[in-house]
Image (cartoon, rainbow, N blue to C red; front, side, top):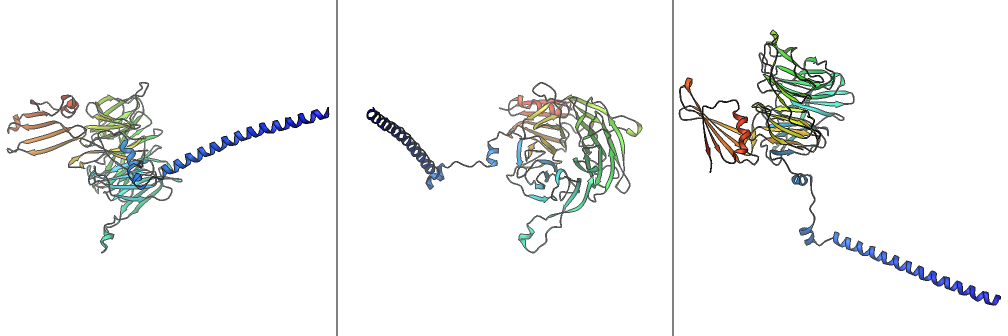
Length: 510
């Protein structure tokens, strides 16, 4: 029996070993095949990543820089230029009084003052001002001239104000040294202002009203309820007022330095007057009037260029224009001149509110923004002239018009500057320009060209007085349409809504 069992056991062992050998052999052949496949793929990858010099020059994939990416982005036709290089959110932007300099405050702790010799240039020279360590800039304004700026900053111990001014021009004998921009230095500084609350707006103006001496005055507005008035050159505190309205949204000063107005938590707008003494300095700041009419909080406001009107936007979905050229000291109330709805809605149809307002220097176009959307409105009717949705890649933080026309190529135009959390400052064109000249008889002649987004002339308008008798003169206006009339309907109503034309002749161009 044992003689039979032993051969069976031995045969079973041999058969098991054979099966194991076959299975292991198949496994190792499969692993070898996988390794060879991986090795082959790596070899091909290395070969493709190291092309020949000729192949590299002609077929290598280009690297997209930030400018290349921006180039692929679809811009609004009025988008003129973008000031790049900011390392963080741009919290403030302002023009100098001559519009040839533009200053920006950035969260990277740097103030940049750009020289705008031509707003359409591909690059701009700029002066770099490094703020003290830990100072986060929140707003900026020019002081007396383009060589001095006032910056509001937020630090751990509260808010500070710094006035930077360029040193005297470099008179070194070395021409290389003379070409360098003078380094700025701190002329004055104030710390722990506004009870350590954050400064949300900083606006300056030339004091030209009454006996004012023409010096710069600057208004700083905190996120609390207090507002301060400063002398731009010396840094002297000229006055403090309180809205007593829980929290401020913003505050500004009229272009002539007379009035200060604040948008706050409530529906009423308070206005103060800076009273100037005979020596030209501010003697006191007194409450002047209150604008009543909105039904909800006023989010933003701006003065008209002549300082006689205030434009306000509210959460009640309306924009109002007020006449403040009243005898308020005789209890004459400011009057509402215009009310028009905010033409902006969310996905559910609810009316949105504007966050920033800025009126053009000629008082005709009202620029407004909500989030990253910009509206250009007819300041007379509230009609939307143009819209730029997603004008920035983030919310707009500030918008301001150039006080005067500036060079844009071969033209002189007003320019709107906007800043955003997307680290960019953009210039937007105002495409209207006018040329005034006397004719051979000394009578006034005005030629106005209205252009489209691509600088094609849509409409040429010529005005002239057809008689020398001033008491019986007639204004003759001629419209020369250059393209479809539909493109200029808004322009006509926009520019001539106030005028009654005694004679109108229309010529259609071929």
